[in-house]
Image (cartoon, rainbow, N blue to C red; front, top):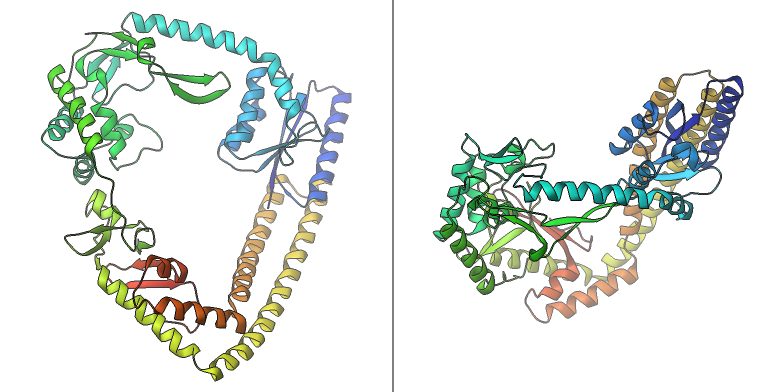
Length: 493
């Protein structure tokens, strides 16, 4: 169900503007009611559109970043913004957060792909924004040439004091040294990451205080540390830059255009060790062999953490990928032999073939399927009627909100309750549709029988057989497989 944020702006609080405010509200009430959508909130500002410092506009933008609604409605684009920076900010909400923007003058409707006016309006300010960006970049470049760190987050193991890098007084510098030493001693990046994770060593993101910081060290994190020249005391900046003033995407800068100032701060790693590691990184990347795919790769999963199972030749079987990468802190092994999986699947398929060989079984199944479909369809019709009744009820609540018979808070509470009902009914509806689709016909059964007989002529479980007849296999902690077949009859335990 679409949730709408309605934005209304008038320039002053004069009487004629108050009339405009009331008129705009009526337009939105009618539009939302016609679409069958919900109103999340109505944001009203009495202020000029040339400034972004509008209380309720900023509140709407904050709510948009938290994905509290799906659509922004405005009477026209000028009600939202009259400056380029804000235009791009709202445009990015549409593109990055999956929030649509619709203006009632039909100039913009991202639901239908109509965004031409948005680009034209924003273009007027792009040159000015680009000039400002160039001036900022030149200032940062000047600071970098002077040996001042210009990044927002210092490298792991360092802190910024008065614009320069200094070694931290905690254990992070020793972790950096450990990573370099272990890699030179022969440990792989994933092995190092697994050990740090199992020892509860905080990640660089965690140390930096990032909001979405995870507790797992990864191969990519180790690689960034091993290749960072800051650790030898050199300041290397301007390694990447934004694609344009309107995009946050970054591109790599060629080495000759990077800003390199040597010996600007105390090193954590000696140059000899750093160069040796760079040499090892090239050698190991050059000669590393790609992991081999096995029969159940991409179809076998851990039933607890949901990660894919990895093949291990020393076990002649598979273990949980999460356990393999991060150790027992992340999950248990869930180990299972490949031969057991093959035997189990082949036995199930052979059982199915024996069942569908019996003609009376096919006739009985057809009668059961027909009766089941009729019952499921009746349940489906009943749910459709219930959903329509609730939708009609919600339209009446918009009228009550427009007539000020209920408050915005009361409206939202009632609508949320109704949406929960609709969601529960929609889930039941999807379950019924799935059940109806899964009901087999005689033709389906005969086709399945021929396919199975064809596969069984090989008397082995081939990749073709596996992917044609099995959706997914989950392995429990005790090694018991749960096989989800593409066929549903007869039910195989």
